[in-house]
Length: 441
Image 1 (cartoon, one colour):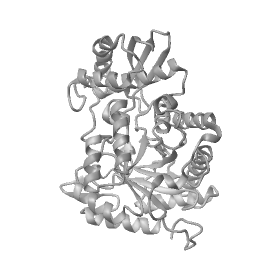
Image 2 (cartoon, helix red, strand yellow):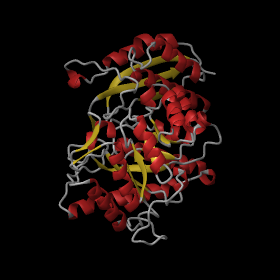
Image 3 (cartoon, helix red, strand yellow):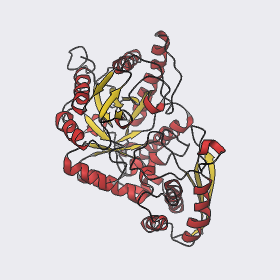
Image 4 (tube, one colour):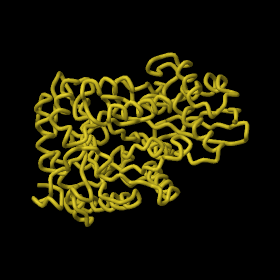
C-alpha cells in the first residue's frame, strides 16, 4: 500500500507533431511511473473532449490548459490517496471534472492521471502491468489488425475509406503474426513501386497512394500477401475501416473516389459484394455513428459472415454499447481509452461488450506516443484483437515490441486465438475457388 506523493504533468508532442499530455507520478514507496495520452484525428461526436488551448501556438492544439489542470486541480486532490484504489481515484477524477464529456478538465488530463496511477501501482507491486490490471489469467495474446493503406482523414489522397488492414490470424503465435504482417507490409511497398504508386505514409504510417477505387487497394494488398509468400484467406485476411461518418452528407453516403452516392442499403450492398469476392473478415464504422437503422440492417445481413465493428458508433461508452446490444447493431467494438477518459470506465465498456457477446478490439489512435499502455491493456482484458498500425515507426512498434515481451514472459502459458478471435459464423471466400486456400474468388 503506497500513497501518491507527487504528480506532475507536461506537454510533449505526439506522432503528428501536435502536443499531448504526459504525466509523472511518485509514490511514497519511492516508485516512479510515467504515462502519455494519445489523440485521434477522426473522432466520434460522442467522444470525451480533449482540452486544447485554441491559441496561436501549435495551430491552437496546445494542451497547456490540460497540463495546468493536472498540476493545479487534480494533483492536490489526489495527494495521499492509495495508488491501489484505481476505481476510487477514477471516480474522483470524474467528479472533479463534473461534466458528462470531461469537457471541464479535459479527457486528456483525466486519462493521463488514470494511466499513470495504474502503472505506478503495478511498479509498486513488482508486477507486469498486464498482470496487475487483469490478474494471473491474463494469457491471451491479441491478433494484430495492421493498417497498411491509409485514406480518408488519415491521408491526403483520394481514397474514401480510412484504413485497409491485414490480419495475420493464420499465425500460431503473436510473434509469428508480427513477422507475417511485417513481411506483407514490406512486400506492399515493392508492389506499389512496381505500379509506380507512392509509398509515402499517412497519419497511421500505412502507405497513402492515390488509387482509383476501393478494390484497387484490396487487390494491391492481395498481391503483397502473395509476394510475401502467404495465402490470402488462410494465412492473412483483409479488413477495412470506412469511417462512414466522414462520408455521410445530407442523409447519403458520398464516396467521391468511387463516384457513388448511396443510402445505407446501397452501401451495405457494396460491402456485401466485396465480402463475397475478397477475404474480408472485418468492417469497421461501415455506417454513420447515428444511423442506427442502417446498422441494424447491416448486422442482420452481414453479421454472420464478417465482424462489424462500431468505433464512432460506441466511443467506448457502456451506455451506447447497451443500446447496440438491445437493437442488434454491430457485433464488435473498438476500445479506446481516450474516448471515455479513465481506465475504470474503459473496463466497464469491455465488461458490457462481453455481456452482449460483442468482440472488443483494443486500439491506438492516429496521434500516438511511444507509450505502450494499450499492449498491456489488451492482454489484461483478453481482447484477442489489437489495432496498433503497421509494423513501422516507433510509436506503433512500441506497442508490438511490448507484446513480444509479454508473450515471451508468458511462455508456454500464452494463448493466440487466431481466426477464433473474430467469432464469425462463416469464413471469407476461398482464393481462386480453392476452399483449402482462402482468398479472392
